[in-house]
Length: 89
Image (tube, rainbow, N blue to C red; front, side, top):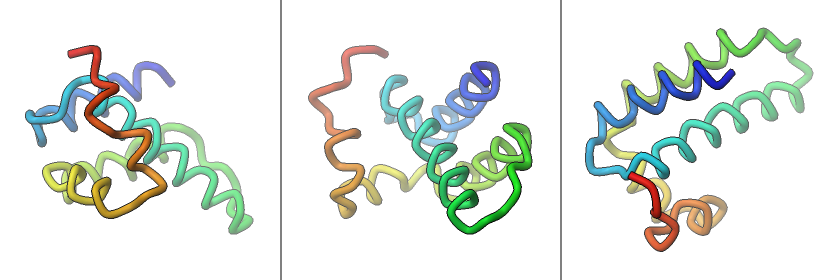
């Protein structure tokens, strides 16, 4: 799982270099977690981390450069993605 997270974080940083590394990692973890929990709630069988990573990779390609705009408008993620927590780069 760590290898998937690392690869997706690197992909997101390429797409949106303005994001600090720690925030990009948080985004990746949130996107993976949200997809898997939403699928489980819908009764979909777990397809594995490889499937999740492929979907998140597609989201990053489509929306990676705009993720910071989403966080600003969604209170669910605002606390997790605020600038004051960016201690790692």
